[in-house]
Image 1 (cartoon, rainbow, N blue to C red):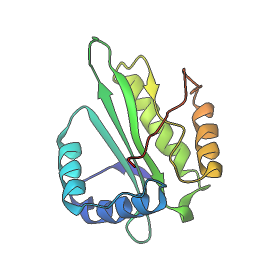
Image 2 (image 1 turned 180 degrees about the horizontal axis):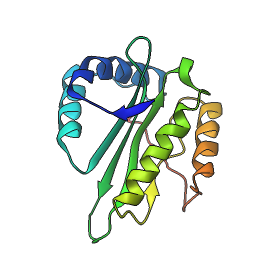
Image 3 (image 1 turned 30 degrees about the vertical axis):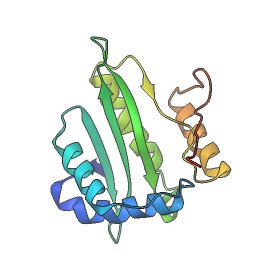
Length: 151
């Protein structure tokens, strides 16, 4: 159902990234070049995990996680992107993605896994993601994520 990303997924990853960017509340201009650079770096980085799920057309979704070894021997895991196309939400793919990340983080010796509970999609989508995270033992840690938009 879910699998590691492969080089041949580049085109589908671009399409999925454009959808994620358009759906988010971040209102940022999409960059093909920067997405390709990120794709190239992530697919070669042993401290990165990119899981995808296939769809009838392209990818149903993706999750990106990375190990952070800054200052410590044991890493922590940072989930930097977690996105499912609307048609694939509620199908079990989100749980499969999260299980894949949690297993990878645990097997990598991570002491903690961090993610933002705010994808800036909608309050409803954010709450659904927070509920999913709670099922895997995530809990609020300190103050919420704050964002400032350049004026």
